[in-house]
Image (cartoon, rainbow, N blue to C red; front, side, top):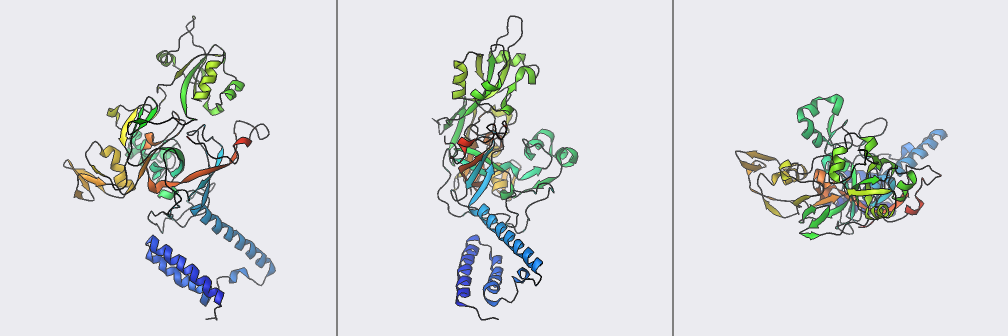
Length: 468
C-alpha cells in the first residue's frame, strides 16, 4: 500500500463520515460494503481506478479525457436532478391560465425535501423510457424504501405541486395517454386488458419515482373534508377563494358569424381549445336546448362553441357585440368516471364530495362504504394486503375494523377546472409521490405561433409560477 498523504486522509474521512450518515439514515446496511471501495479510492489505491484515463496512445488519451468529462457531467446532472432541481415542461392545459402549455419550469426539490430514489440506478433526465429505442431508463434493483430529507417547508394549500401520478404504478403501454390502466380495467375488464396486446400492449409496473410527473394545485390538505358545490370548493364547510386564473367551460353562441382568430386571441383561447360544436360534432340540438340556446326563426342554430374561459374572458365576451349568449357547461361533456368510481353517489365534477382526506397518524373506522375511498391507500400506497372475507375486513391476514394511516395525503386540482384530470379522477396523492415545487418559468413557447411571430412568450420568461 502506498503512503497516503494528509490530504488523502482528510478527503477519505469527510467522504466516509457523510457516507456513514447516509447509510444510517437510509437504514440499508448493505451499503456499508461501499466503505472498502472508498478506502481504496483515497488511501490504498490497490485497484487502479483512474488507469483507463491515461493510455499511452495520444488519440486514446484524448478520447478518455472526453469520456471522463462526459461521465463527470452525467454524474453531476444525476445528483442535481435527484436532490436539487428538476426541469419540467407543461404538456397539458390543466393549469391554464396559471401555467400554460409550453411553459418550462424549474422545480425545486428542497421546498418539500428531496426524496431518496426508489430506483437509484437510472439514467439522468429520462423519467422511465429512453426515446427512440423505447427501453427502460432504470434498473429495478436495488429498490430503496421511501425516505425524504428535511426540506425548507411543507406542502401548503394552494401551492402548485409537481408529483408522480398516483395511478401510474401499473401501465398498459399502448393505452391512450388520457386513460390509465385502472380506467381501462373498469371499462373493458381485466381479462381483456391483459390478453389484448394489440390494443393495450404489455402491462408493466413502475416504482413511485418512475411514474409520470404531474403538476396541479393542492386544494385539500391531510385531515380536511372537501366538497365541491356548483364549481365552488368548500374545505371543512368553508368556501375557498377561486384561483385568480381559474377557467371553466362555457357554451358561447355568436350572433351569426364564426369567431375569428383575432377574437380568439382577445379572449386568450388556444387553437386546441377552440371547439366549434355545430361543425366538430353532430346531434347537439338537444344539448343546445337544454343549455338554453334558442333556435333562429328558420329552425337552425348560430355558431356555438365550447370554450374554456376565465372570468375576465367571460366579461370581455359580455362587453362585445359579436356574442348572443354565454352559458356555463353543466357537464354534458364531462367525460369519465370520478373517484371513488361509485355511480350511486351521484357525484359530478362540479358537485363532488364530501370526502375526507387521510392524515398520517389518524385512525378511521373501516366499513365496506369507505373502503372505496381508502382501499388503495391501504394496499397500494402503504403496502398492506386487504381482503373482505365472510363480511369481515382482513388487513395482512388479521381481522380489523380500524386503520391508522402511515402517510399524509393531498387532494390536487387543476385551475382549468373542466379540463383537468386530477384527484376527482384518480383520488388522493400520497406524500411519497410529492416531487417538488415549481419556482421559476425559465422558458415559454407558444405552439400556435411561429418562432418569429410570438412563438416565444418573452413576458413569461423568468417569472414565478401563477399563484392562487
